[in-house]
Amino acid sequence: MMDTYRMYLRTLQQGLKLDPEETRTVMAEVRSNLEDLAAHLRAQGYAADDAAAEAVRRFDDARGLARDIRRARRGAPLPLQVLALILGVVGVSGLIIAFAVLQTAAGRTAFSFRSGMYNPDFWLEVVASLTILTGAVVSLVGAAAVLLGWRAHPRRIGAGLAAVVLYDALVSVPLLGVLPQAPPPPVAVPGASRLTALGLTSRPAAGQPAGPIVVDQVYADRTVTYVRYHIPNAARDSELVPALTDDRGRRYDFNFIDCDPCNGSSTSRHIGGMRQILPWRVAEQGLARFSALRSDTRAAVLHFSAWIDGPPLETVRVPLDPRGWARATGGTHPFIVTQGRGIRVNLTRVVRGLTSSTIDYTIDAARTVVPPGGAMYGVNATLTDARGQAIRPLPWSLGGDAFGDGCRVVARGGAHCGPAWLLPPIPQGARLTLTVHSVVIYPHNYGGSGGYTLNGPWRIRFVMP
Image (cartoon, rainbow, N blue to C red):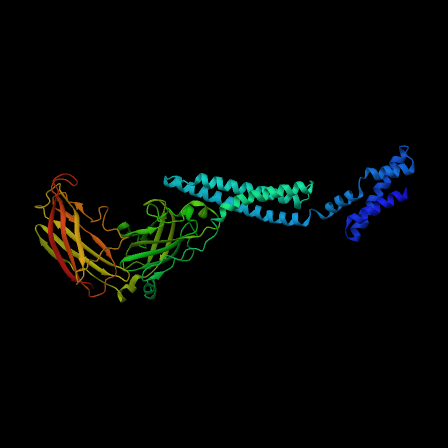
């Protein structure tokens, strides 16, 4: 009987390959179990040698038992453990990405409902988040099967992990095209260094909101106010529209406004799509241009809304002092008038800034030209320098009202237009000529028949202050 035990235990000990302390513990436990089983068999009428042989037989192959004990003590093979750790990291990362995508989708959808628009990428975002979430859950289950010692054959665990790796690879391949990119550089502001040197650049006051829009700097030129900002989550917040007021509540409307990105005029390449709904998205750089602040302004107040004149979703206050204008810019109200053929042209304001120039003038038609119920539109005018070269308005500026010429109907007869031009920088002392070539007169009603072109020219010569 002892020889049967001894041979079995020797084979078992050789197959364990554990440290000495663990080996002694396992061997004592197996020996005790063998002896208990043999005693039980002897009580059932087995002979001593037959009971020992039957006990050994019931314990099965010694090498197989050693392998099972070693696996139970040490866990899965080292390669499977390393793979399980990797899958665990992948699973946790997938959970973070999936919930971030869902949060972005929910935010964009809520914004769309508030602004009365539709989020075209909603289902893309939902499918993407659910796909990533499925991969994360499967990865965590596979990692738990190995690290927590779930009872299964190593081949089955290996096959399961291989399937998990294949699924994760199929999910990850589309994401390779939307890996993090270097954030775009800040939007360039013309003459930024000169504006800063004159103290015409300011940053928001402490405690400004962290989003959805982060205002970086405000540049207060005498002709244009530049607002440079960035959008951390462009996929969700790039449609917000900026509005500008000052500390006295005066609003600086859309006479000279331009912004990118913003609702209705965005040329952003980062709105929507997989790149911007993932957590590693880059911030979108933005620039808004407004008409010039008043000289007595001491703070610019920016409001960001879902639509023009909508309730502000964010308000940022930026203290500034535009009195540095006087050292480097010029402005005057010349009130130079020319008239003829019932048309009166008046040059009302000329301003020279560091980054642009502004010229305002008016055109008034007498009642003999435009009777009550008539209108005047279609102003054709140019500005030229001393060599006769035309100076055109900046391409991003919007002049006057919705018609572009600031024209309006006068009920008692006559007509009035008030164009406002935002031009490139013009040097001080430059000799300029404003020429109104023609206007379109509608004696009876605007847009109907009977309109005709009244030709000039009407010229005003002046010097840039």
